[in-house]
Length: 197
Ligand SMILES: Cc1cc2nc3c(=O)[nH]c(=O)nc-3n(C[C@H](O)[C@H](O)[C@H](O)COP(=O)(O)OP(=O)(O)OC[C@H]3O[C@@H](n4cnc5c(N)ncnc54)[C@H](O)[C@@H]3O)c2cc1C
Image (cartoon, rainbow, N blue to C red; front, side, top):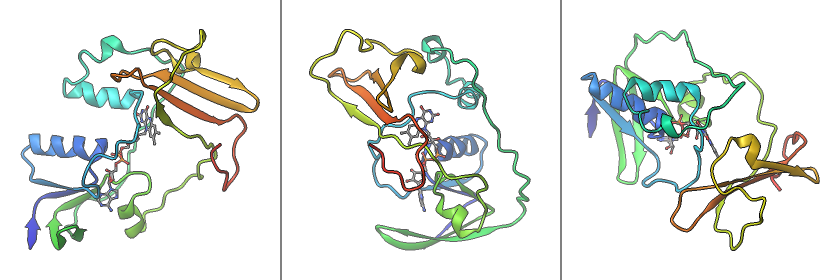
């Protein structure tokens, strides 16, 4: 089987899906290839960054969300202004549960996350340094709340406590059973190979 399209988007995370939606709205033929067969169920975004908010606003998707936002201060953002020539076609082999097939398009966009397979296969460098901070994140149901536990979403600085060499973030989620997100980590910067507590 050969799927012939204009743009192949690898990865159906927020970047890939937003891009695919934009291309489709612009009348460009687009195919999204995603490794997972179902949402992972992992907790991720709890905050909307400046650039994310700008992109949502461009599509009129920020209304209603902005009213509930807790303002952040002293934070910045970044843009990736990559000088990449986009004048070549691309052909890829997709290996899925149903077997293997080929796709070709004018462009392929790597939206497959920080550990991007596409980036590694194409030999694109990822300058910078590896992460040095370790933490774990868990969505939990608490049997009881102390008097100091936060009852509602607040600025992150007011939801974080430190002590004994660790920091801990606890913030309420809007689940049906009063779930909370619990994120403990070490205060000091963790070295290479450090395991989360
Ligand atoms: C615990 C945690 C908390 C976070 N909190 C926030 C937050 O509060 N606010 C915020 O803005 N961001 C937050 N982030 C970061 C945010 O989740 C990422 O910036 C965002 O998910 C990046 O989107 P993406 O589409 O680029 O990549 P991803 O969301 O990683 O999506 C990549 C997709 O590509 C797929 N894929 C990978 N390899 C292949 C392949 N070879 N073939 C096909 N598909 C493939 C993956 O299955 C995945 O669906 C958090 C991240 C974590 C881990």
